[in-house]
Image 1 (cartoon, rainbow, N blue to C red):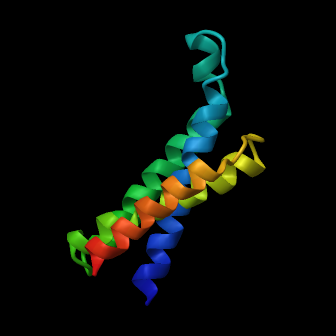
Image 2: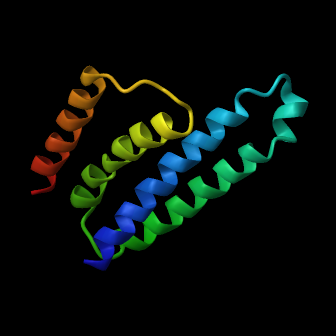
Length: 108
């Protein structure tokens, strides 16, 4: 059970990392990008998520862990709606549900 909680945390960190990198992408010029703290927060979160992924893979099969990482799409949709004020359409929700359903079938 703890490993599935770790997967949820890992996927959340990956989605949050993407949000920070999206915010960093608004920098004008390479110098401003490298002085943007969002770049480093995003990079740190990706590295932390990778570390958690390595830990989880020590105990669970890769064929289970990888499909479950599709939960990242759910977190991404929620965070992009809340933080970036993006619109969530029915088509997006249906697409994410299809991806997650497929991942569940593969993991079983």
